[in-house]
Length: 388
Ligand SMILES: *[C@@H]1O[C@H](CO)[C@@H](O)[C@H](O)[C@H]1NC(C)=O
Ligand SMILES: *[C@@H]1O[C@H](CO)[C@@H](O)[C@H](O)[C@H]1NC(C)=O
Ligand SMILES: *[C@@H]1O[C@H](CO)[C@@H](O)[C@H](O)[C@H]1NC(C)=O
View 1 (cartoon, rainbow, N blue to C red):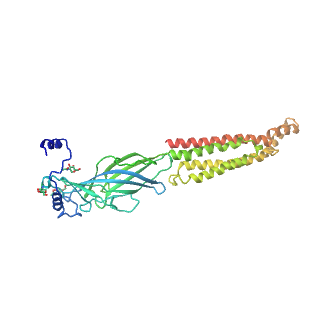
View 2 (view 1 turned 180 degrees about the vertical axis):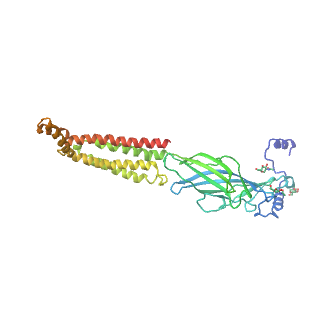
View 3 (view 1 turned 135 degrees about the vertical axis):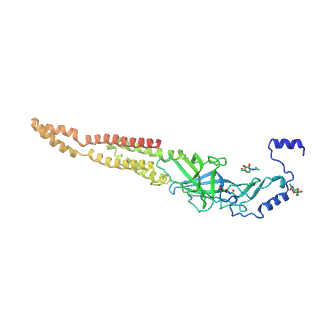
C-alpha cells in the first residue's frame, strides 16, 4: 500500500485495513488470553481493592405502565465496562489486532441485578446471550439488554394529567463497596435507540451511582414519565363535563310537559352507563384515589338527587297548599288577628304566595342555581388541583 495514503489514514483516524491480521493471528490471541483464564475469579491484580464497574443505561422502549400493580415494564440495556487485568495484549504481536469479540461466558462478568424487580430474579441480561468486546488495554465492554419490570410507586390522583416517577436501582449483588465500585458513565439515560411511546413521554432521566450507608454501591436510574392525556380528555373528561352541565337543565323544563322525570332518569342512566364504560380505562388504585373518579361520583350523586328534586317539585306543583304554608299561615293568622284584619283576607293573600305552584317554581330556581354552583365549584377545584 502506498505509504502516503496509509499515513493520511492514520492521521485522519480512519479504520485501518487488516494489515496482515489473519485468522491465525486472532486464534493465537484467543489461545494466549484464555488458555489459563478463570472466568469466575474477579480479574484484579490487587484483590483487596474494589473492581471499578462503569455503567450506562440505554432505554429502548417503554412497554407498559401498570398502575394497579405499580409496575413499569420497559426494554433497556446496560452498558457495563470494567478492566480485566488478565486480558491485555500488545496489538503489534497479533497483526495489530486491538479488539476481540468473545462470548460473554468466556470472561468474568459482574452480575448486575435490578433491585426493585417485579419479575424473575436474575442478573440483567441472563435470559439471553450477549457477546463482550475486549480491547488491547484489557477493558471489557458488556451490553446486556432485557425486558425489565420494576416496582414503582404510582400516584394517579392527577389522572389524566399525571406524571409518574420511577427509580430503577441496579447493584452488583453479593459484594459490598469493598468488592465492587459502581460508577455512572453518563449522568443521563441514553435515548439513542429509543422508540417513542404513544402513551408516555420521558420527562427526566437521570442516572447516578451512589454509596449507600449500608456499604454497597447502587446505580440508580430516575425516570419520570408524563402521560399523554388527549385520549382521556376527549373520551372521559369532556363527556363528564357535558353530562354534568346538561343535568340541571331539567329544572328549566315546564312541569306540564311531563318530560321532566324521564329526562332526569335518562341523564342519570346515560351517566351510569358512561361510567361503567370509562371506568375500565381509569386506573383503579386507592392510594391515592384518582381525583377524576371522585368528581364523577359527585356528579353522579347530583344526578341522583336531581331525580329526587324533580319528583318533589312535580308533586308540589299539583298541590293546592304547600305543607309549610300551614305553619306560616298559623303565624300570619296570629299576627293579623292582633292587627284587626279579617282572617279571610289573610288566608287569601297567603294562599297566593304559598300555593304549590309558586313554591315549586321557587324550588326549581333554587335547585337549578345550587346544582350549577356545586358542579362549577367541583370542576374548578378539579382543574385547580390538576394544575398544582
Ligand atoms: C492493594 O491495595 C491496598 C488498598 O488500596 C493497598 O493497601 C495495598 O498496598 C495494595 N497491595 C499491593 C500489592 O499493591
Ligand atoms: C500473523 O499470522 C501470519 C500467518 O498467518 C504470520 O506470518 C504473521 O507473522 C502474524 N503476524 C504477527 C504480527 O504475528
Ligand atoms: C480500551 O477501552 C477503554 C474504555 O473504553 C479506553 O479508555 C481505552 O483507551 C481503550 N484502549 C484501546 C487501546 O483502545
